[in-house]
Image (cartoon, helix red, strand yellow):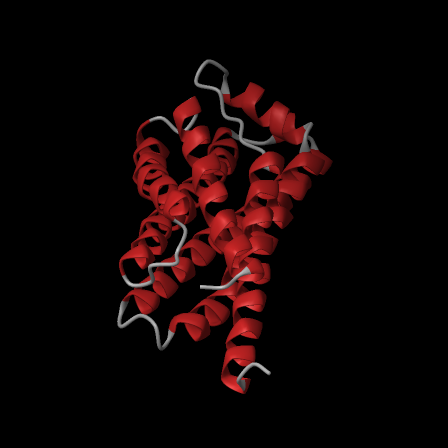
Length: 224
């Protein structure tokens, strides 16, 4: 018969693995549903016309990021509880990074809701009647929304590095996951701010999600 403490630890590992995996899947879903369009070659009128014709896509994107924010926030206490005796300071640092990611996605969602509300009102009144300042304000809100996405994703990339550092304290932490997180985390942060549309950034995001998923599956199946 297994000691009671071991059973309790296994329950924590399984719960943490499941919740973190759900948060990772939510992030992937948000990326797939993300509505990101402002063309440097289009006029303000053309950009707003495109946005106004895709209000449903914008709405889906906004709510998917809000759900990702909530899922990321929910994962924090499970992560802290799992490692509170195994790590000295790292788990608290990683918890703060997850909080930063959750906050970035939350601000993105809230900004998107404001944009959606204002844009819907303008479309109902007639977008051709809006003055130039109103149009500029709408596009500014859209850019702010995407800025917060970069903030949240950068916190997530930093968390990936912190999670990979767990290998130095817990030897059973999967090595392949550590390598992926060490490479993909800084790569995603760099391309977030220098070339967010680059395919390498997409590959880095995939690497982070694979690395986190390997960690979660190991937690669920065998524990650490």
